[in-house]
Length: 283
Image (tube, rainbow, N blue to C red; front, side, top):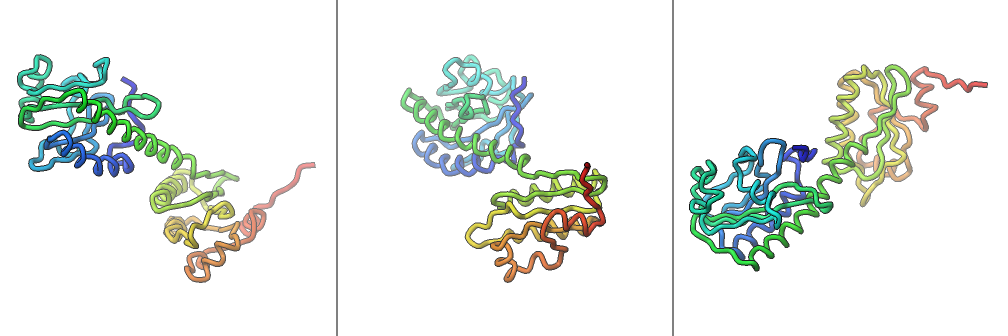
């Protein structure tokens, strides 16, 4: 089954945040104790986010082998929905091990997709009391799933951008250029730090030339966490040479003093000259 999303279940920040806000509304509207979102993996369904109003039935991180889940019945249903007043009495669910484990009765679940229609998992509600769900209830839960589908797309886009936004260009053995572009928030900075340090160690880098000319300063705020990046690089024995300091960055540095501790030059040619690497034009 090739439906595994790239992100780990712990990384769906937008989906988790949005679902937490919706779960209370869903619980009140459908009069159920529990609402949760699952993610389909290659072999199991894992609960990404959950809400339990009075009694905890489904904790986050709860995982069940795909063949033994209610989610399989939802995803395989041509209408992408499954509901029953009592799971213990339903012919399809009463024999599932999860039914005896959870001891729940009322259940309603709909499939959860991204905006391209690719199956992500399910959005489900359940209660230990019998619940009869009508077409209006189903339509309501599907509308909530549609909202969450945009959050899945947002998380996937952020994930892909993180990998595209750490351009490291090797110049020669031991020398590479790191170009920092756009807006760098704390989450993106942490990803950059992780990838740069791994790259530096794996490729035995001696010098990182860090170009800041494409860095965007938002609301007059220089991303001070980049100072942590530069210090981490130095601690690994890799010298950091900074180029492309724009006027806006320079103005912020007067107060923040993040860059004066590191070698700063005007451009790439000056950085290579400092290292002792000479660019020779071929005739």
